[in-house]
Length: 156
Image 1 (tube, helix red, strand yellow):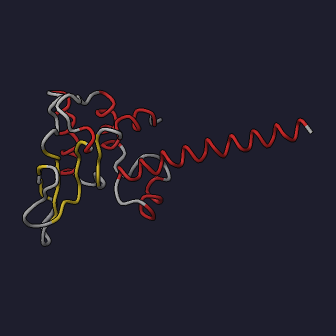
Image 2 (spheres, one colour; image 1 turned 120 degrees about the vertical axis):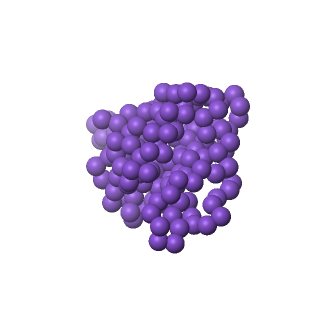
C-alpha cells in the first residue's frame, strides 16, 4: 500500500517528469536516491537529473542546470527539486527517497488505475500526483456531503 501522505510531502519538494519505463530512467531514480543519501542538503540543488531523446537515438543521460536543456534533443524524463525548495537550507530526506523508490517500483505510476488516467489526462508523474491529491480532496468533500445528507434524513 502506498503512503499517500509521504508522497504528498515529497512531491512538495521534488518532482519526477516522465515515466521510468527503461533502465536508463530507472538508473536516474537510483542516482537521485544515492545523491540524497550522500548529501541531503546539496542533492539536485543546482542541476536536475535528466534523460533526453535525439533524432532516433535511444534515451541518453543529460543532467542540466535548472531552466536549461540539451543543445540537441529534448528532455523526456527528469528528476529535480521544485523551485520553492532549491535553497541551501532545504535538505531532502526519507520521504523523498520513499517517493523515488515508489516511482522505481511502480514504473507505470501510483495505483491500479493510474496508467489509464495518466494516458488520458496527465503528462507527468508530478502532475499525476497533483491530480491524485485533488481527487482525494474531492472524495473527502463528497463523503462529508453524503454524511451530512444522511444526518439530515435521520433528524427529520
